[in-house]
Amino acid sequence: MLTRFIRTQLIVFTIVSIVGMSVMVFGYLQIPTLLGLGRYTVKLELTSSAGLYRFGNVTLRGVQIGKVTSVVPTEAGAQATLVLDTSPRIPADLQAHVRSVSAVGEQYVDLLPRTDTAPYLEDGSVISVRDTEIPQQVGPMLDQLSELVDSVPKERLSDLLAESYQGFEGAGDDFGSLFDSASTIGTDFARIGEQTRILLDDAVPLLDSQVQTVDSIRQWAHSLADVTGQLVANDTQIRTLVRQGPGAFDETSRLLSDVKPTLPVLLANLTSIGQIGVTYRPSVEQLLVLLPNYVGQLHT
Image (cartoon, rainbow, N blue to C red; front, side, top):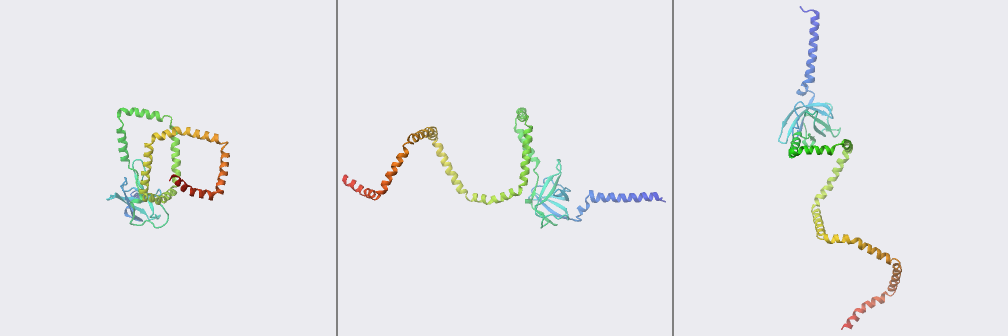
């Protein structure tokens, strides 16, 4: 027969076991997520799996709201199935980023809505590949780095390292300033990201007009090539002109300086002659009409 103390122990053990199993089922194993209770399913189209895996986290602006339940290959890349909480509601106009949560490549999906208004994601919604962004693949980058290292002759590698050390020695402060400035520029660009996007959108008509006038631009470039070709052909004459030009300008300047005292008097006298010509213009015109005939008669 069980004593009261033993019965109490069994009851406490049962309660603790139930609580522990509940925590494991609902917290660790995420059974409600797998069963779809209080959740809805969304498809995410990707150009590649980008290292995304089953049971990866799904976040909304960094706050976890769901899980990745499957990642399958498709003809265009890959498709991930996301199981999301029904609350909060997520706008359908969004950008989905596949990001790394750690250096060992644990990937997760971060949803970044562009607006806070309807329409919202619902069961069966599809996030198009044009609204997704995947991280840069490390493998191809390492392959290119390996090819770059292999392109350096091994017997010159020590010289390269020594020269690099001498070149960058003592430049720590300069690199620090460079990185700080780059960070400031990045922050400023992030602040004006929307204005930059509008500027790029507004530049589309200008670029389209340039495409439409490509024949005119090509003709202008051809004409410019002819002009530069002519300049190359006359290079000797142009060089002579450039060498002798300053001397000619000096001579012209001295000539103008020499005639400067008498030039106003000459111009004044020419003004008087011009006034006389205006006064006798009819007679001068008549003389110019008759003079050719008179000269012709003299020759005959």
